[in-house]
Length: 190
Image 1 (cartoon, one colour):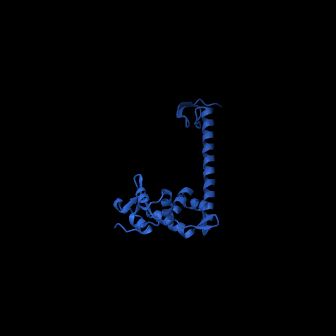
Image 2 (cartoon, rainbow, N blue to C red):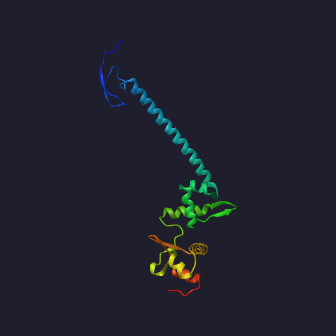
Image 3 (tube, rainbow, N blue to C red):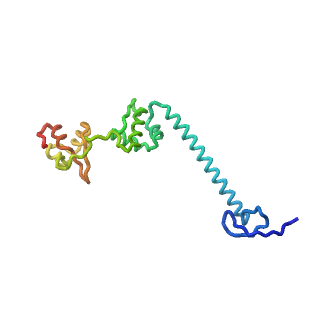
């Protein structure tokens, strides 16, 4: 027995009005029904992949959480930052590392302290010694080269070996007069 019911409905996929012959009809055509089905399947696949990825990441985080020493790659995954950012923090001495041959390891307590400092909004290992003393109390790099009669590469090498802080202001790089005067054994200008 066929039905003579005609119901005006809105397609759940394309939102166009259509005349349905049954109460359960949801789509205006077979094409809209197929597209909706494919969209649901795609969404379910993406969700399954996301859940699988999260479970793998959680397992990795649990494994890393148990380790006392982490490599650079492991530490970057554990903290959630890139390797390059981690290397920058190491070069700025914000993070203490140990080396075993050519491999670099970071102790878990140092990572925890680094993360805690970041969460508190503090710059790790920041101190008053890193503040710019002012241009009048500094030599520019070219002034220092002329005054102490050294080449640019020699000056940069000395500053790096002695771990003397350089300050950048605009396009110029400055070094504290007191640091260079004590290094080259000349009279201090303070």
